[in-house]
Image 1: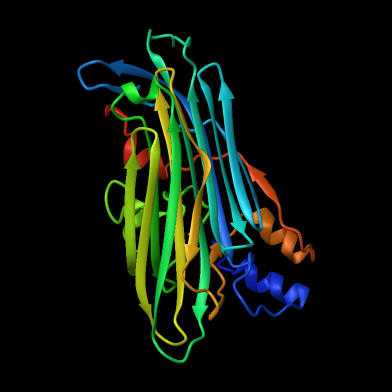
Image 2 (image 1 turned 180 degrees about the horizontal axis):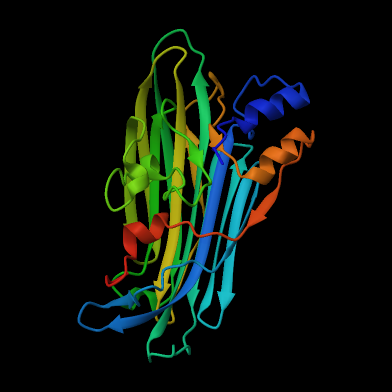
Length: 307
């Protein structure tokens, strides 16, 4: 079946008859995934290596017009992530949490890993008459348990980008790895085949926390009158060996001045049931589906490689 490209915010606006005079939550797309894994701790590297073939996420993801969430929990531990559109700042708000069970021993004698990932994109158009330097400040706080700080690759990742609307689609299709994360994470090529063709990235930063602390990032870009752009953010929490990485204290983001920004639709490839709901005249879109999204795994957890 051919993929149908459609802007959900644009259709929702037609259905509701509203006209937006400032950035709103409808110009927003988000996705999330979570999982727990068996892994083998290697003392020589201080990392926990996934077993070959063990990279399929086992969490369940849920999506709605202004957010997404995912959760996984079993004997290995638990992981969850959440994205919402912040009505106050008109920017994504992201949370992630991962906990590896301290007393778990897998069938091969190893331990466990928990991984939570979440990302979101929001669209804007600048209505000013003269060029304007826009800045976006993002801050991520994370708390690591003592056990988490003792292992080399336990981490929380923050990635933020400002990028062009041309050539970008937020894609929920698992057959296209990345789900539209490529311009956010900066992973523009191999090992992710979904990143072969991406929009121009105007400003980008990604950084890891490997112990309790905070990351503050400021991106700047000179906007032209009438220019449309996307802001994308990505957070993950990954931990093994009985540790906890808590990045649920929230990624907070803020513009220096949003007074001349209006919302701009995020181009989506929706899942089939979403399109059917729109045809049925529903104005509340919600759907849930268990599926693998390998964006973070491609970046950090390839089989045979320490994760």
